[in-house]
Image 1 (tube, rainbow, N blue to C red):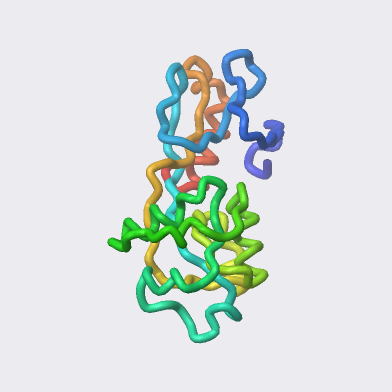
Image 2: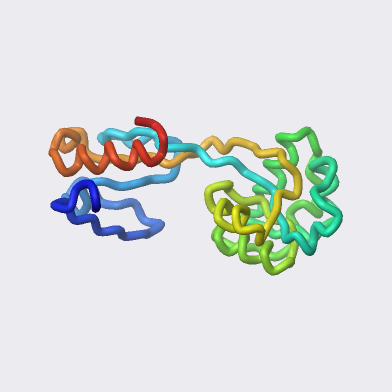
Length: 179
């Protein structure tokens, strides 16, 4: 807004896809694999899965190997798959215990659970960055795993050159480090 005071930005969040076809929105940021037929999309970034916990829970410091996370209480994502994906990426066969524990539908809630000392959580690094920087959580082990999905800025191809849309896309791409 400081760079382009004449462009009004309205942010709406939803798990539903923004309707770019009827002009309800000019630009959207979508999470997925980037296959959006009929839309122009640019990858902004792809998060990494990281294992985090509270400093009190990890009182002795980070664990030595990914398998060393298994004795801790494990906070689960909605589908109870992130721990298995992360462990298997490190060559650890996920046991049934890797899918047990309280679950939350949102990484921000998993970060809050980790801060509260409820257990270790596998979360996307972008959701944990603030809490990590503030020292409210720490890496259980420095072993990130890239996710196949990413965040994309999308718009209709015939709208890419509209000045306000082009300016917004350029700004968000610069912020993401892809411009």
